[in-house]
Amino acid sequence: MSDMDFGPARFNMVEQQIRPWDVIHPGVLQLLSGLSRDVYVPDAYSGLAYADTEIPLADGQSMMTPRVEARLLQALDIQADDTVLEIGTGSGFLAACLGAMGHHVTSCEADAGLAQTARDTLAAQQVANVHVEHRNIFDVWPGSRQFDAIAVTGSVHAIPSQLEQALRVNGRLFIVVGDAPAMAAMLITRVGEDSFSRTALFETELSRLRGAAEPQGFVF
Image 1 (cartoon, rainbow, N blue to C red):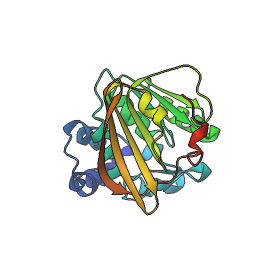
Image 2: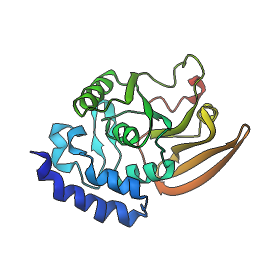
Image 3: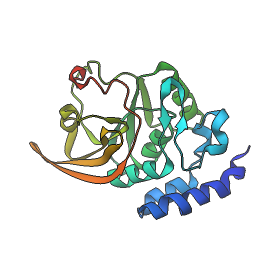
Image 4: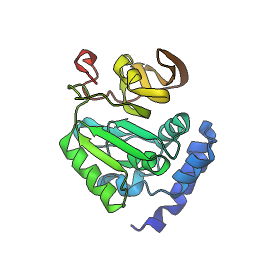
């Protein structure tokens, strides 16, 4: 199907799913109204590209629903000069969104197949400012890097303190914390060298981030 075939579905996604879920950020609404989500969806699920459902990917992973993606983007409020870390590339769609809003995105994916598929799709869509790394963040991460925003696309039992330390001052972290069925989407902001604000945004349920059951192995 051509991109034009998905136009009404994309419009309905924004108007019937995203706006009613308290997404008012004009940049996010404009982005999701124009970006083709269908090209990032596995062929078997192309008909569900704009539906209010998680879409299965390889390795037992899945794409978040469009409304959760939109709330994540709104919460992080990515600026044009921001450097962004995404943990869990999945299909590459959210990485493309983050790249469209920010300066550069480093996206880490633990599954080699998903990482390569995302690279191929992003390249085909001429997304040049997203770098996909095949890396499990619960392995040792060499060096010390900090980011303006961090997006975690799978849930964790508890917030790894190393992720907070990977934020620059005024940096923002979006992460879903807890155990099913009681999970909360959180926004953590580094307000000083040693201080953070933590805000619960909404309740949701999200697939567990690969390796997240063993956070003691994570080193930044």
